[in-house]
Length: 96
Image 1 (cartoon, rainbow, N blue to C red):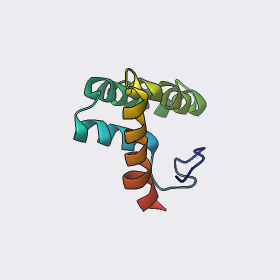
Image 2 (cartoon, one colour):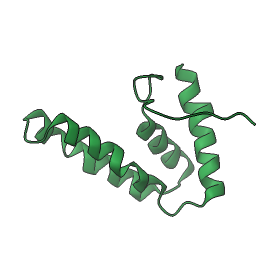
Image 3 (cartoon, rainbow, N blue to C red):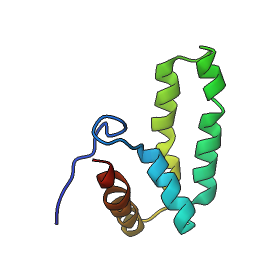
Image 4 (cartoon, rainbow, N blue to C red):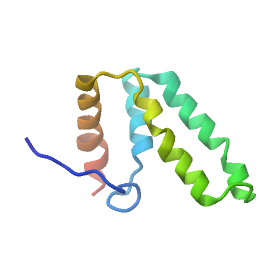
């Protein structure tokens, strides 16, 4: 079995974003769709406030990372492994 270390991937090591991959996976496989959609809507709603400098860039990006776990809430370890296998093999690796 191969092992991979995940760190600062978004835009640094791969030309993709983890949240986008999780979102696509969840919609495609009908898994945790409400939390995935809520994650996207609630964070996109912050964009105008960030653009108008009502919130800092750090606050804006931190909220995206901090709340990412919402999309995995309630998923057991076996299912999470399947999701992360798909995320790495089908979504992230092709962008290298």
